[in-house]
Figure 1 (tube, rainbow, N blue to C red):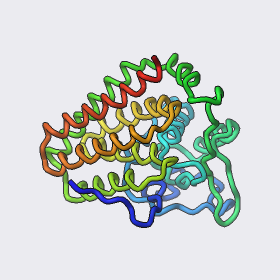
Figure 2 (cartoon, rainbow, N blue to C red; figure 1 turned 90 degrees about the horizontal axis):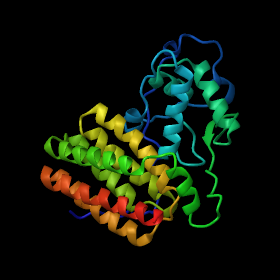
Figure 3 (cartoon, rainbow, N blue to C red; figure 1 turned 180 degrees about the vertical axis):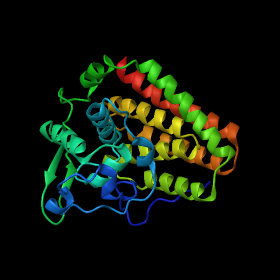
Length: 283
């Protein structure tokens, strides 16, 4: 299947997000941060963010809200310099009050991960992540993070979920799903190097969401967040990215051709390449 690179070299919209929510969802809390800061709800529409955010369970509202917002940042769905979705949107999808959400955002601000800006175009903005402390290729930081992650289990589970999602998409993809998949693929091909990881993540999240299994999509988002923590510690290799792009195109082509076996096989190969790259840096 022929794919095209963006002609104008521009980057796609930062986030596909969440439909606006009514204030009543948060229990009619006093105070409206949007009014105070000028924060406006973005016209975000459906997308991978819906698969990442889910209602938290009662009992650990603050902890689970913090976990999910951290996952959103780790996935790179909102790139550095861009604004998080409006508070009322996040609160609605998480099923928490704005008071709880603001407590979480305050923690992230104290950790230097986000900052709050006031005024007409205010809101909560994502800050750039700190570079690897070793100042080199990130291998020392990678090993530090590996100590907290079962890498082989993460890689195996990722492969199971990804191959399954690719096969399910090929077996029953709606017309609008095909359009979204093509758009996500094109975005990876038109991405600048510094934005490639985020667009790559969005393509894979789109496949997971289009599988038709919310449970699969949610589990994949969690696994991908852990994987990105490792990938962020190694350099982006141009040759590897070119090969990865060929595999992306082959997976999408197989899905659009409704060839489930080929889609699964190409995705399995693609996951194997990522696994080999990580193992190489760990050697």
